[in-house]
Length: 209
Length: 225
Image 1: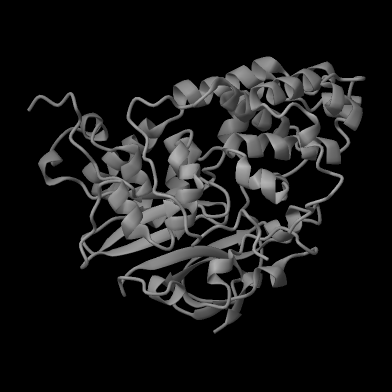
Image 2: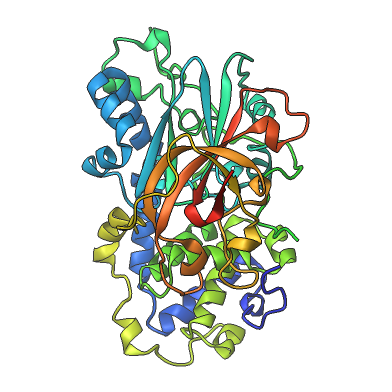
């Protein structure tokens, strides 16, 4: 057990209530000249307003519509995503894994909660939960059924545990009824969960056809 | 004893998926912890590996009780203290006693550099030797404790594959070794592999013989099977 009674554990000297604890830390850091609060605001703004699953969805939709792009993406995801400007913090080394009729991919990080932030944005609460981190590797089919997905026995489930700095993005199978749509329309079918493996692409709600 | 963060395979609750309209952050302080952690991290006083180690070495009772961003916050406070950037008195009273040394204040992330810092990230690929193992080779995962560079130190080798045999399915190239880097003992880059294990080998009474689990393992985590 690492350092249970170590004197380096000073976090509990600050108020236990987390909103107060972070406020106290922010005050200390600003008073010490170690924090620019405007930079903090700008970081939050990036993740709240700019970076999200729409970025991953655009990549997936393009791969569906452009076989040459798809083979480049699967061969060297890291180079392609760097070229596209999506290889930032926590997505420096991405590997795209393709779902097929024979394999369904599922991504987890059992040791913390590593996630491809530049492609999917801030991870959802369930992805960071003990329940998902514990069970995704040992009973993935049951976990998938809790997301409403049943994988046929003939299809294998391959779980990727993100233990290193490699981040995995699932390239889901394209729904037959979406074939032929222009890429921006197609991107609306690509859900966040379909790129983690806990979901499948879906007809967008505003689709009138 | 298995540390609390190494939870792969533990029994746990059902999962509660989110709803499409759920906010990105459950509460205001979550986003503040995210922003402060990234901003302070950008000063370069520690690596992602040291941050992870600080979170996972929170006392077990705190680790189990804390939510995700509380772990970030606890780890951040302890790291700031360990690196001498804030002192115990300041933490106790929630006030800064004095300005930090100029060398640190000069490294503070400014608003104009936020975009560039997030876009650059912190790549871990390095130059290094050719891989010892090859695609398709059978390998066996060591015990996590046999890969630590200090007692109870950091490792990214989870217990659930320890002692099990798997197959190399991908060579990721040479990457910084967290086991030393987390303790400020250098990057010691090593080849990194994706190793595939049969789920029916890892877990008792597993319902499918087709399913697999892939774990990224540094070369020093593996023996020939």
